[in-house]
Image (cartoon, rainbow, N blue to C red; front, side, top):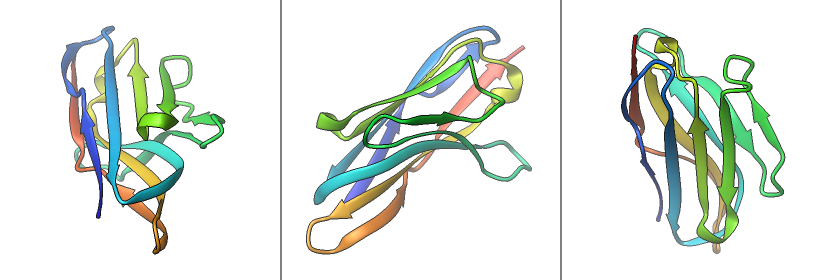
Length: 120
């Protein structure tokens, strides 16, 4: 089994910062692309940022210059540093990863989600 466990969400005032973490654990051979998505109430889930195993990143236009994705391959962990937060960043943030399971192949996994609330 593989699990993605997120942490770091919470309530913050506009202009503040939060750092999300997501650790993959279980029968993992390797971790390929990792990413963060978010879903606000009444809206579809949207891409926030992705990062390859080699460190190539992609950020959605709405968060460029404010959010930074990074990862620690030794810990199978991905991070999202969120600065200059805005009320419109309020959402449940989900971690996503493509993971090679020993003896099984590549599978895509989601974390359980962590709430980020930005007050104005």
